[in-house]
Length: 401
Image 1: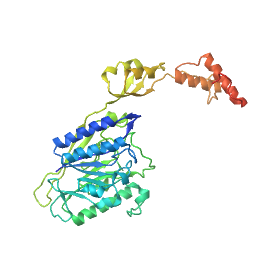
Image 2 (image 1 turned 90 degrees about the vertical axis):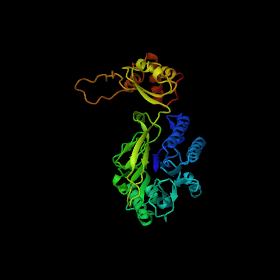
Image 3 (image 1 turned 45 degrees about the vertical axis):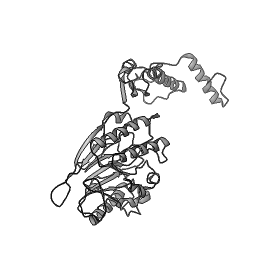
């Protein structure tokens, strides 16, 4: 049996305001082709199908497109909800969809509703004695909402996921102890490396779960962290299929294939063979570093890329943004990384401690930072006139601002 693990699609997400719908559709086309070529039996989506609790209509259309294409190829789907999903909306009609091969695990009660898959990919009942793979989807569980209901030891993600895994293992041991155990979970697990596109509001480590929570799983298909990585041979993040930040573009995106081959003896199925498949770049994301002249010279090499420019000029170059926009259709942002610091504090000698700047000196320093030089006389006059009006409590003088 072959399983494909993916997560964090974030359908409907934008990258610094740029619509990613076309790139996400291209990923789904590639996914449809891959499951067909690899003879995949089931696709696991470990949370964050959508980017918002109320998805944009385009995101809903992409989900329908993904599901239809997978079902048309005879592939089952097991998807759990993430912290970006509305578990109610994603799980709508989930009991009916089970019959179609779309197994949505979005509610607390779904933790002990496994999908038992035979080696040929068919679904078995709990009473079937044949060895299978039991797939349990653990939806994202907000500790403050569920810790008492699930009888967790505390109001932390570690305690809540630990209680959920205890239920999963107890159900497997009671109904199908011969089965291999696969678990979907959406969480920050200790040892993982996150990126800037994940949104986490937890403090003091209360959102971190130890990897030992998944010790009883033959494979833990994790979501939430967008960088693909293996915490062990059996515990993996597939990562998001597209980069959602410039930092993420530094490493390749993946989906993970997990194969359970038949084995002789009472176990029925062997230990999983895990293979990572690189996801192509459907919309390149690049950070280009150098002087403005050097970066613009690279425009022909990155005609379709979304571009962040890190400029190393010692002073700001007037019109830099307009020149970058003209050179790169996908230009998104720019920063100056090595501006020369030439502003000095008048009257501060070598032995001076903290100098108190006048308002005029603050303005001059701001102009130096923003424009790369001292303010011209007309700007200084306008600033002084506006400042005088503030001090007197009167309205701004004509032409002062």
